[in-house]
Image (cartoon, helix red, strand yellow):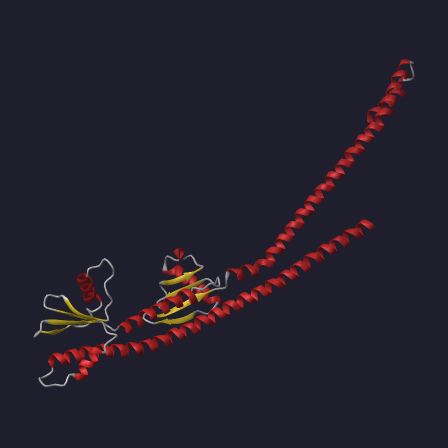
Length: 335
């Protein structure tokens, strides 16, 4: 009775420990999971707001770029006005406009192609010859605009888009790259796929092995599975068109979701192993008891048996009735 009560108390204590441990672990997991989910929600909101900022900035840059383009066109018009102006035309305004140019790169060459005048053009890097450097600028940066030729003096004017416009374009490219690398491809451990509007090309990814998505079917199956968990985020990248951001819950959230079940399995496995070890130990102890009892029994029986066998032989030697001795020997054999 006492042993049964002790076993029940031990079982209840073990069950209470398991329940309390699982409950507390589940509570902590819920808190951490909610915190991780908040991070993901903040990241989603940041992607949306940053995408709107990029779009707004692109609109602003386009307006500024249009102004800079007009400035370059006016500069070209001023040079043409000077070239084509009739005698006696007042060129003061055009001259002032050209003198005040501080944004549009300009190269003026003679008949031999040598640069005789330059403005807003960076000097050549160390070790690079000036003729080759300026020739490369004419063939790359200034090839988009038709040159203005002054046949009377044998000079040609080359000009490119303004320095401000080029810097605006570079800043826009950096902003887009920053948007992709710092916001979309984030540090929140969220698996992300950024694909183009055709949904056939992966632009950027994080936490996903893109090498396994080597066919359109595999890519489609992957982002469709992600879309079932979370709604995709459309973003517009200036100069590149619409893109789609697919994402799923972080690895931490996934692990926390299954952590209580894994912990329960581990505790159950531990209890099972402990029970098996305890049962094996008990059986071994019982076996040792039985072996000891068997040895003691054999010892207790051995002495009288030896004595009875001796008496049987002694009685047989004295000629006691054989039938009685045979029955006695049968009993000894059975013992």
